[in-house]
Length: 586
Image 1: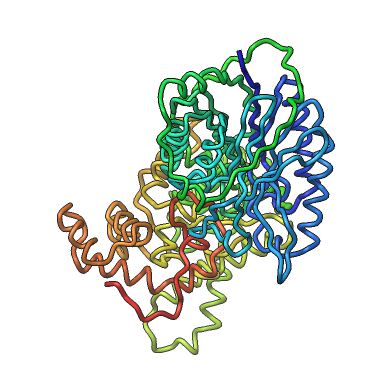
Image 2: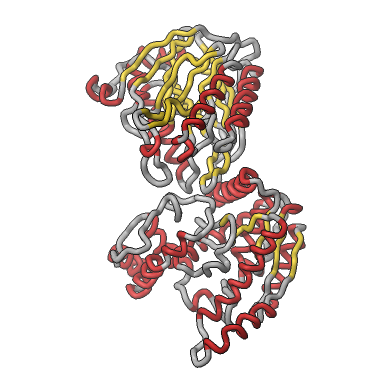
């Protein structure tokens, strides 16, 4: 019986840490070899980390990445490996490529260059990389293996079809596919369909970890030639997925029917195949590996929460911060941010600071104290009244004769921002900003106040989801750290007496629905109004008012810290709107 033991190594690389990434890959090769694997695959651009962005425009960076690849290749004895790296040389007349190297017996035996380059959302690959054409098929001791990289399998006709036409029985797709709400189901359907239509084993290995705004969830997948899932890796954690592939299944399926693949002309538009025979490196001496148990799907709240924790942990770790500081108001947003920070960094590495003003309710202070006690974190109580009063005194003469309003209210937020940044500056702590997507969208946040900070943990989380995440965290444990009073009380900025968010904004269930339609779905005003009227939600005035707030506050969002991306269209690299624009779709 023809079998192949394969390993998929979903590792957490760091952009620019070429030597560290190389060591991580070498350790993965050793672990796979110890498990009896004959071939191990690593994620997209594993040598450089993903996405390397403008680093690939520097000759030295690309040269260093090639030298690291050669060092990794030297360890490929008794096992072969597929490793993502940057191929080529940057320059006016030269190109670089997003590539996969097939490492065999201490050398680079073959290179596959990515053919389909994504150029939407957070992806700018056409800015950096040239398009590949060659689709090498590795004849691995009688087992025919094709390679592809991420976006290549998101197309209806890609390198997998070119390689299948050349007899490939396995397609190994290396990825750096970021997490988004709802993406996992789409991804599984896509990989399963690719396996079924080409009658191949589809082996999808994905990166894991956080990189700036992006979070990679791992969840490597293996589908049989019938399109049925047979193995999957851990979610939001490093993993080495090892399993035996029975190639007789491929032969049996292909002998029972014909392959209705693309035409020769369609395949030629994608690229051309080449053949590379190599001897199988190792012999499997251990007993047959049982395929991994397939896990139950995570709830939306569970996967989002894990993404936020992982993104926060890795942003701090990869930028050199050991500790974080949070302005804890006793409200639901700062509470959720604090709980995520503790789960990400440990209670001993989180400092919370209560900064009550003359308008802060007693409940907010006691809620902050209760949370700190439940989490076991240090809480400083620093009332801002002296600084607030000093600001009023400074501005008293110039503001005389004017009505007090938003400017005076925002002084409190800016005092808090100043204090929290000063603490950061003094002790070297990372400031975690607490604003949510609903606030960033409508400008219901103070520039140089509560928007100040280094990382915005829940920046892409709508307010309604904030509530659901708090309920999830209390139910999931350990413990129920979030006081019930925090979840139940009406949201308020507490910048004036008896203030509520509902004084300035529609109910959050209406607001978030309007925002999703306008920002993520790109509906125009008429479409949103029609839906809201049909649902009995916001009226025309409400919808147009929300859209005006979104457009008016683009300048604020440009100055916001980076934060974890969880939606299809996050503010920042995903959504790039001009600040000075007179176009209004409402």
